[in-house]
Length: 265
Ligand SMILES: [Zn+2]
Image 1 (tube, protein in one colour):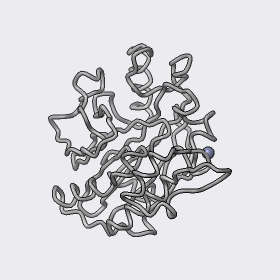
Image 2 (cartoon, rainbow, N blue to C red):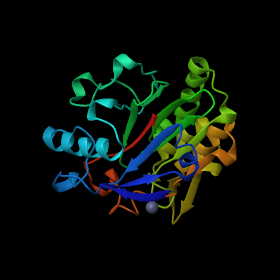
Image 3 (cartoon, helix red, strand yellow):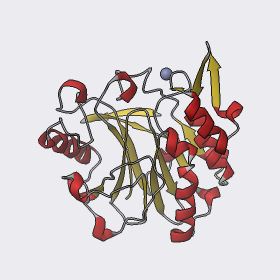
């Protein structure tokens, strides 16, 4: 990833930057906002104890930095599932000002509507962004350990195929900052779930009697199984637990959420 500062520090995937004439994406950090305490400072999530005015000011700052208005976004209420709806023009602005009209039970979006920014929120879960430069369509997914195990990237790609005629071989994908294999410890219950869908030896790391889930590798495997080309997948390789001074980490006790977004120009 590459960091560029324009009003705020924002992070970009190099592979997607090659297609900036078609789409713009970004990953926010925890810096540049107005929230306090464990939401400090650029909390993008509507949380109980972070005043809505703070979140709205943060969201407005991000919108301005990427050349959009606050109403050009859609936000989900994430539940670690695999529901990935298509977003239409009529949905523009849903979830921007309140969770009451956000997309319920949603862990990803796809669209082909220009200047409508699909958002996902994370703090250790894996944000993943997708661009189909041929059919001019985009997607975002939120893959925590559950979404990763349930292979939400494959669900999203299937939806892009049926809705937009996407050929997975054309997709450009970025796997964002999240809990990494260095820190993302999991218990036996999670290892059992992993084993249902993956070969655990491929996606877990054993160290000092503990097991760590490599969600980057697991999502990479799901993408390549879905026929995304290896050379079109960029892994940020940034662990939010290690690099907690830059990104929110739930496991470090943060209540804030950073965001990944993408929109067609
Ligand atoms: Zn780490």
